Length: 88
Image 1: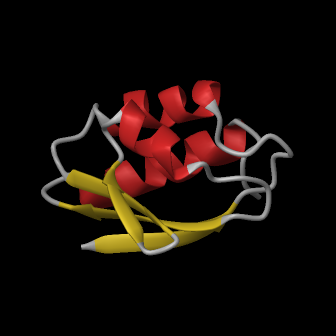
Image 2: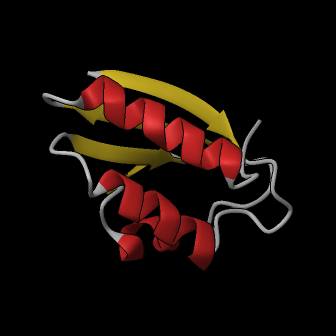
């Protein structure tokens, strides 16, 4: 398992558009990928799960991946977060 902590820097937080980008990125991988926020753990391949967390500006969350392509998945998700202006 690999995991990494992130802090939301986008004023609008993780709303529909960035959530859909994260979900579509996660679904490309075979690994189990989860997002943890405020002790709630959701499948990052579920748009409803991600949206249900309501992560706003300054929100600290963790992404963890477990499986055959876990490191590639985490690297690509980190890149998607940075490219989308959601984190530094």
